[in-house]
Length: 206
Image (cartoon, rainbow, N blue to C red):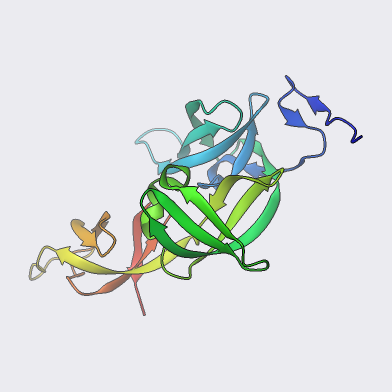
């Protein structure tokens, strides 16, 4: 008979889980952290730069035990414990209804995850894209996509003569249906690099 898993801190975190400290501004969607004695996965993150005071990371968290959600602010000076779980690389295959199908690159077994599990970032999945799935007792509890992807602009306002990148940004539609703000000189048909964590324009693609 296997020895029972011992839990600590309100009986939520198994003793054998490995943790590493990261700064609050380093939390990214898909990261699993310890917070208030429990295990939480970051669903969305957004860097906020208020007019007064330092910037902070606004993080939407989902509890891995009971599914409750929480919004927390983490400043760069704060540290949290990132949970090191089993990591496996998967290749995205296709979308089937509300399910997303991935393939284990070692065993070739397929894994289905619900869109809700991946969140808004599911729109950035592309055929063959490599993702990292975090597993606890062989159960998926988190997923990490590449930090940046290249996409084509399908709709954008026309370029205004004399307008510079510093003057203002304008809305544009990406090929995956996501809207982002881009510099005025970016037009329809151009390929740009997008940050998948904050869903923001990074630069023109080479």
